[in-house]
Length: 285
Image (cartoon, rainbow, N blue to C red; front, side, top):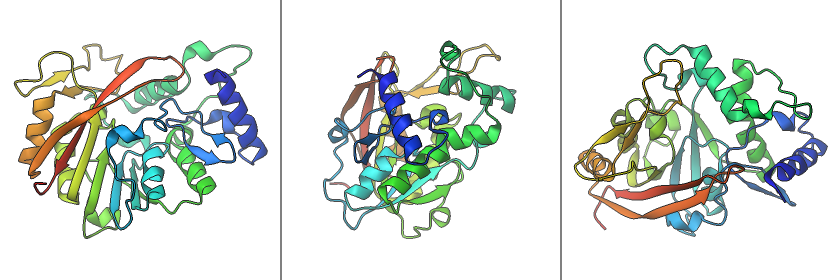
């Protein structure tokens, strides 16, 4: 079955289940909702989640999932027994934007990411998205639908990564595990983002992200934002491996180890991706 056929099958089933505007949703993750219903996510981690090394039994652990999107990891942590807080932006206006970039151009960029111009055809008629629509169909709607179908009790916290605090999460004692995936690449200030998350973690932080090509020493960040003010991909920095490890150590993690890579292919393009996986612990093993 092709990805497009999978989308069409899901949309038909979801509409029959009461999700009348299913075709407007953007599914970042493939999530198994049971009864043969799987969201047509562009990232499918179901067969490769073992690469991250999360414990099979997470009973008694509190976990913060930073930038949940559709929520695959949040629901996976809950399935393994953890209490989970899913952190997401309050609105798309809270996304970082390069200085001088206006909100509207940023929102249009996101809309084109969700539904590229190449999809315009008699068979696929683009419906304009308002700012509120974009937020709902990209982030909040998919997560809520999955949570409802799964009967999940994952808690939701709305904050930018820079402003997150234990008080906002409702877990004042701190988290046993903080998971951060493809978030730093969308921040203008990666160190500031990590510095906000570090105090929330009382145990382990797991980071998964893209490394720049080339040397991983000395510590450095590669700028990928380009020079065209009218063309911004909402991505600016690739810290190299030694940079990430040293920043985490300086932020109070006693040990930081590279534990492997996660590899896969984006759907439907088939573009191959690879993410390094780091585990940072507040105490030495």
